[in-house]
Figure 1: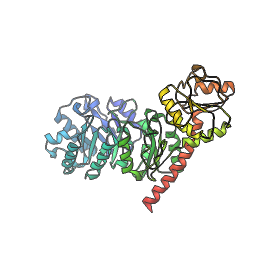
Figure 2: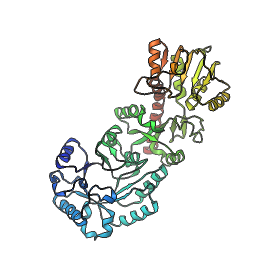
Figure 3: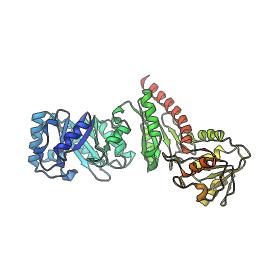
Figure 4: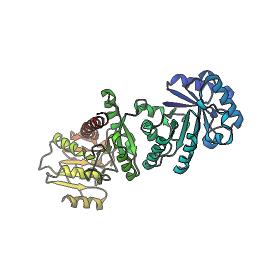
Length: 458
């Protein structure tokens, strides 16, 4: 179940918000207002959660304990709604005060790292209680911790509501069905009620309501730029229109090893992952030990570099000839893929700001690293250098080439592409390059989804 959390700022606000958004369940955070009696009770029904959060656990206003508990009990008696009570109150007051079928026990830990031992002990105690749900809100610092949480949830006898916080909190909420919980929380874009809460716009963008226990998970892994990946809309639109139960998500990684373990432990739900900077050379120890990877297929235990396919398409489109002088700008993994793709072309040179790295790369492929550039037939830009207003020809004092290939992409047209259009230079921009490699990735994703489903349902 998806729960929309609405702060009780005033009666008019909650009425307007409840009318505007249709959601399976609504939580009203009553602690956002100083007077409980002013809440418009006509909004309360059996799919309402009333929460008066303590300031110690993220609440806005302080209420006397018995005032708070008596108000919530009265609402249950009148409307048969759900009420959210912090675990603290179950330790302090007799359990007879709480209507068991309507009570959510919530546990919040805002520490950077939650004690799993403490959480497991708490879960065992709560398993003995008669309640509606057990709500857990803790930080998810890495994939190892997420796996531990999944194990804890699987071993609990209670129905769990999930509110992941921290670095991987939003991701954990998006895949809440795969984690094994009953529901998760989303919030208003401009009025979130918790740190790490999914916004309504994010829930819509990633189609949270379409994700269920059988949904296959994939996405793009890399640096913070994954949030602006073209693949998010491209793949999700395709899956939705084709009626395929799969979702493509952005995953920002800062610990490759933890991700690899998580990947292998749950591989039967993953259809594949695109890999972008700075992770393209960090999966060489997996599967077929491909040195540069931009596609992981964990179920089949394969990795690929679909950029190399896009390079071949680009060279054909640009009609690059063997005698052409080619200059590669950049010294990273994409530049290395360009060098592999151009191995049959004799006149290939490298340049970049990192002279040490560039010279090592040139030596590896028996090419020449140059510091002073002259006229070239083809320039390949493998860096995000001067991407927007400026063009690299003028800023780097480069003679205009006959052909240009640009790897970075954006919704904006780069200054360099604008210059190419003006000077009638034939080019391939980042979007076109991305589409060529994405076509190859999609074919692999579809094959992988079919394999997973045959294995599971045969």
